[in-house]
Amino acid sequence: MDRRTFLVAGGILAAAGAAGLVRALAGDGSETLGQTVPRSSAATTIQSAPTSSTTSSSTLAADTSTTSAAPAEPTVTTAQATPTTTTLQAALVVPIICKTAWGARPLAGALGAHSIERMTVHHTAVRLDRNADAPGQIRGHQAFHQQSGWADLAYHYMVDANGNIYEGRPFSAPGDTFTNYDPAGHFLVCCEGNFDQQDLPEAQVASLAAMLAWGSDAFGISPDTIAGHRDYASTTCPGTTLAGIMENGSLQAAVVALLESGGVELTEACGDEGAALVAAIEAGTA
Image 1: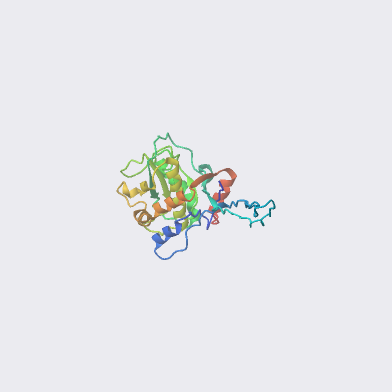
Image 2: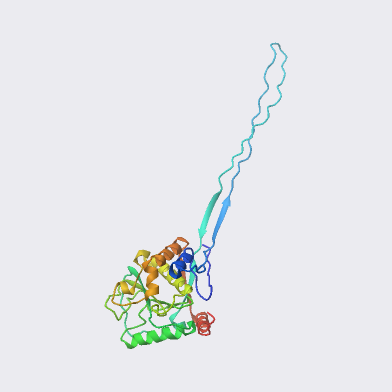
């Protein structure tokens, strides 16, 4: 399978269906959110070799003399096969910044286990006014969560305004919450920012959709299970703007489009590569 990585405006932009997602969100004719993963095709036309037939000579007189008839024009039949086209679809390759690369603390306790059955979207409810601050804010969230008695950052993945994705607690462990719902069985993806107060960046939506498409495929769960934190608890999370693209179905539609366009594969940005990416984010260039 041919694989491609697309990094546009510092974030991963989703495949087919992304433009509709942005228009549904903004309602103002925004530019296309993402680009379609290229599809390669090979067409083969098979043409048969010509075949001919010849009329043999016949006897034209009653006596012993014979005359050979002139050969008939050969009959040629050409078979033109219908072109056969094979479409190969490429997966969108999404880099994930490892915990060690963004500066996560070690676990502060034991983690439980669960089986993922649905996908739930959160926001941090902390404004992100400069994306360069994202790694530091994520470090702060983890520290606060551990100081509150949790073993790790509450969420499985974090997405910043430029579409960079950060590894959180292992998805094999249930998340945590300060609200009145049980997050066991939920795949938690959290967007950095406060979407009761801020607009939702296109790159952030695209990476959120990519992460949910990966989760749908990895855990065998329907995009129909995508919901917001406030669908399960008394909270405004994930904010009015982010909740709106789930309530109108446009986020789910973008996830389905990604799955139908070849799906999503994750790759790790760890070690020097991950550290360089985090440094670029904090410098305002990624």
